[in-house]
Structures are given as structure tokens and as C-alpha cells.
Length: 110
Image (cartoon, rainbow, N blue to C red; front, side):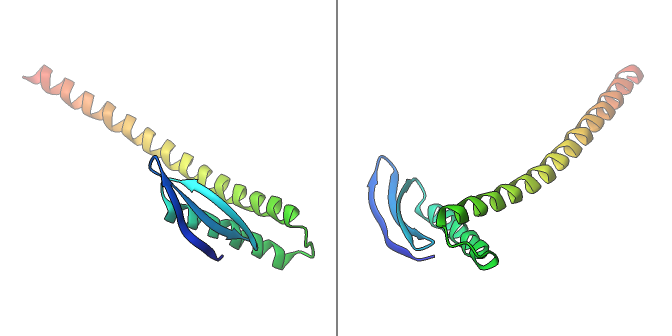
């Protein structure tokens, strides 16, 4: 991905940056130009990876296929996160119950 022009302007804490994704220039606005560049780089690399694996030259079709790849990666990570968060919640509940029991026993003994 090529970044052209860098930060163009700043308004109310948001910056306008110019990026190029799959040889198409876009002016994007956000509060963190480096983050915008990273996102644009991700989309550009996904589109190029899809283009290398398929015979299509239609950039709109490549964008949709790249979006589906990104959505799939997101869903895989979300399922992992949800499983970890569920385990964490279950452990927290178990430890809270154990602590309540110990404190309750301590009050009875004292």
C-alpha cells in the first residue's frame, strides 16, 4: 500500500489522510492517522492476496471477497475471545463463591 500525502488537515482532533488501496486513492478522516494507515494497509493486502488467488479483475468483487476474508478472521477471533471470556467469568464466579464460603466460615468461627 502506498500512502500519499500523509496528514492533509486537522479539524476537531480528527485528521484527514490520503491512502491508496488497490491502486485507488481515498481521503479518510479519523483521530489516529497511523491507525488509519494500518487499516488501509490491511485492506490493501487482503485485496491483493485475493487477486493473486482468483482470476477476477473486478475491484468491487475483490473488495467483497477481501471483506469476507476479514469478516471470517474476525469471527474466528471473536469465538476465541468469547470462549476465553466465558472461562474467565466462570472462574471468577467459582473464586467468588469460594471466597464467600471462607469468609462465612471465618465469621462463624470468630
